[in-house]
Each structure stands twice: as structure tokens, then as C-alpha cells.
Length: 117
Image (cartoon, rainbow, N blue to C red; front, side, top):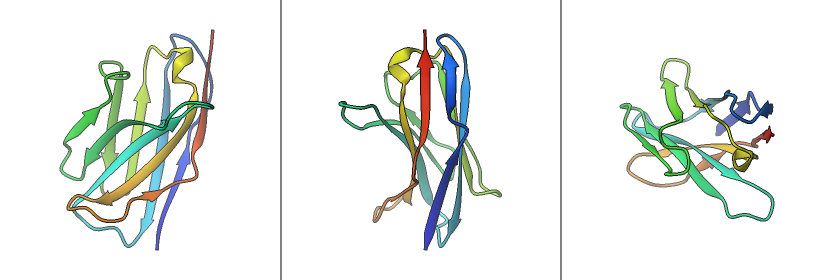
């Protein structure tokens, strides 16, 4: 009943920038939190950033200061722009949504981001 589709991944040179997008559809609670996770091969899954429907944001220390999460509530879309990319940012990036009060978290299929030097 909830679908998330990521897009915008690709290959980027170190120091460059990239934006990924996630379009949500279905029965989504109005007061919600959308976010981005990432997972590199052989590494633990990491929460990158979150944003509430009210616009409150939170960032992982590893991306703080060089990333911006935003959303368009009318389009049910969340964005993540990353600047000053590093090879360590290489991972599959996953979009999520959940009700702010808690409950099930829905996941997208992921989009690959590769940073080369």
C-alpha cells in the first residue's frame, strides 16, 4: 500500500555533487518522517538523514555540513543532495517513510551511488 521509488544515483568524481530523489505513493500518514539510509558492501547499514513532514531535519555525523535533505510535500518526494563527495560515500542509498508516531517503516529498492577518485 506504500511504494517508494528512488532515482538519481550514478557515478561521480570525488569532490563532486549528486542528488538522489524518492517519490512516495500510497496510504501515507500525513505526519511522517522520510529518510535516507545507505549500505556499502561489507559494511553496516547507516542512517544518513531524516526529515519530517514539518521540515525538521537530522543528519549523520559522516555527512553533516555537506548534505541537504529536503522534501516537497505536495509531490510526496524527498531529496538528498550531497556535496564534496568522498569514495567512502559509495553505497546503495535507500529511501524510507514511517509515521512520526511510530509503526512500520517502508523501504524503496535503492539506488547506487559510486564515488571515484
